[in-house]
Each structure stands twice: as C-alpha cells, then as structure tokens.
Image 1 (tube, one colour):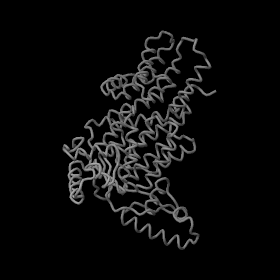
Image 2 (cartoon, one colour):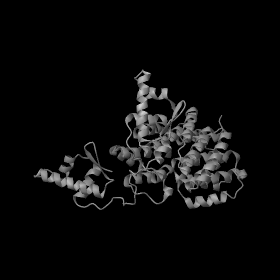
Image 3 (tube, helix red, strand yellow):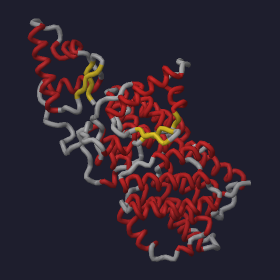
Length: 459
C-alpha cells in the first residue's frame, strides 16, 4: 500500500475520493485525529478554494489534545495556515508568518513534510513578489519530493521554478518547458502536461501565432479536464478567453466570461475584470504570474503569419525538429522530397522576413526562438489596458438603448435598426441616424462594442 504522503500530489477530485476511502476503511468511530489525514483534508479544501472549511480544519487541530508528536502538529498547523493566507490573499498575515518561519531551524520540520514546507514557502514568497526566494525554495522542494518518490510534486516544483526564472529574467527557455513536458508525458502527469501546454500557448499568443496557440490551449484544457473546478483549468480557460478576444470571437468570449465570473479564485476574477473592462487594478497581488506578464509585455503587432507559418511555429514550440519531420508534418500528402524541401525553403524565408531570427538551425534540428519575437521588434498593446473607467464616457439616450439591446443578444444592423426605431418611415434617414449613433458609441466605448460576421456585440 502506498504511504498517505502520495495524497499530497493528487488533484482535488482524486484527493477527495482517496480521503473518503480512507475514512470508510477505518470507520468514523475513532475520534482521535490522524494528523496526516487532517492535513490532506485541509489540502483538499485549499485546492477547492474553500477558505471556511480550511479554517475549520486548522481550529480543529489546534483544539485537539489527541496528538503525541507536537513537532508534526506544529508543522501541519504552519503549513495549513500558510495555505489559508495564500488562498485568502492575506498578505499581511502571510508576511508575518514567513518572518517567524525564517527564524526557525528548518531541521525541526517533520521529515515527511519537508517537500511541502519548501513548496508552500515558495508559493508564499511568490505571492509577496519575492521571486528569487520563491524559485530557490521551489528547487529545494523538488529535491525533497524526489527523495520521497513524489514525482508529480517534483515536476510541479520544477515547473514553477522555471516559470519564475522566466518572469525574473524575461527570457523564455523553451528547452526547459520541452524537457518538463517530456517527463510529464512519461509520468502521465496530466496536470503538468496541461500547465506546460498552457504556458506554451501563452508564448505563441504573444508571437502572433493565434491558430497554433488556440490548438495548444485546447490540448491543455483536455489534459486538465479532470480538475475542471480547479485553478489550473480556469487559468487555461482565461487564456482561451484572451485568445477569443484577440481573434474576434466575441460570442465565445462572452460565454467563458459568464462562466468564470462565479470563480472562487481571486486570480481568475482579476483576469475576467481585465478582459471585460480593460481596467486593471493597481494591486498586482490580485493577478497570476501570466497576467502580470500581460500587463508588462505587449501583444505582437508584427505582420500576420500565414497558416503554414503559424503551423510551423506551433510544431516547433513543442520540440526541436529535423527537416524531414517538419516537411512530413506540413505536407503529409506530398511524397516528393524535392517539392517538399523547396516549399519548406520558401516558408522559412517568408517567416524569417516577418519574424527575424525566430527559427535557428543547429544540425540536424530546427529550433524556435520565442525570445527573438518578443525582443527584436517594437510592439504595441492590442488589449489597450489603461486606467479608463469601466464603461468609458457615459452613454445617453439612444446610445444607452443600443447597449441594453446588445447586452441581451447580438443583432445585425437592420435588426438593430428595427429594435431602436420600429417600422418608421424615411428608412434612409434612420439608416444614417443609426450609423452616426454607432459611431458615437464606438468612440465612447471602443472596447465594448464589437462587430463580427455581420452582427454587433456588446462585451
């Protein structure tokens, strides 16, 4: 039988099932608390975002006298309290707790909890924007998780350290992501597979490779579907919402936003607010790392890539490839190598014109260089994040009517015309009046009124 510590690395739904199975096996008649099991219960509430129940677990452990090992009790309480402050974004108490922990001899931490200790400490530092300390502790956590044989948490620690180093150095190390992805596939760790694909999709988004970013984020969601109520899945959905915005798919965008508005996670609520209003909070603690990047970096306004160029970028972001692999992937129906090689030369020349240095060759592989895309050309901001009010200038009269009509459902020009004015005479005058009216609304609320495939939408 596996030790109870393997529960530390399970996603929420599986963790809950395992806890229930253990409870049924041992029965509820035993009133003495098992600290390891109580910690796992607290971990489950943390993963679900249930702050109230997590607090109850902490109070239950504090008030119990059924423990012989005070060292484990103090360790478990410390970890659960840190998790509570992290989930509730209570930075003041989190800072106070860390200040105390820094003065404690870490050798006093229960041995089986050392991986958890450094992992949660790293997450705490991350929340407080101490990224160097966070990356250092994630690496320490990885060592202890590896010693315990907790390969999923080991991978998660490496992944988080990679993300933080990327954020600190403004350098995307694709080879590190690709190495983590290979290990995650070998270990069948769907959570890390999904998170890694989500971050790779995010990088493609900033490179203007929207189609490939769209395909990869959908693969991420598929890998994470077993934790659909968790933070990782919702962050992937938020990334998809950003893509829908950039691609002009406003109906799909509105559906995701409506779904995510009820999220328990502050990171998701902050991202939704940003996409809805383009008005971001000055409190950076509200945002996840990826959204902090979005606020600092720029969406690419470089020349659009063609379908083949986009497909090539999406293929190379997962791994370096040989010419044979590339031409077989891009033109599977063509068997003549001379024709395929000639086409590949042309595609490569075109993409290098649009994205200088994005693809390099180190025999026998071609490699994607995302850093070159984000640093070599001056970029502009497509999302227009600024400090505008939520609704822009105040709408009045028929302008407000347009907003109210389109909030309920999208309409074509003539449907909107009928909704506003009915079947009045002088249709030509009404058409001109509506055109002027739409122009005024667009000027006041450029980020809210959208037009796609013959219909107007209010986002």
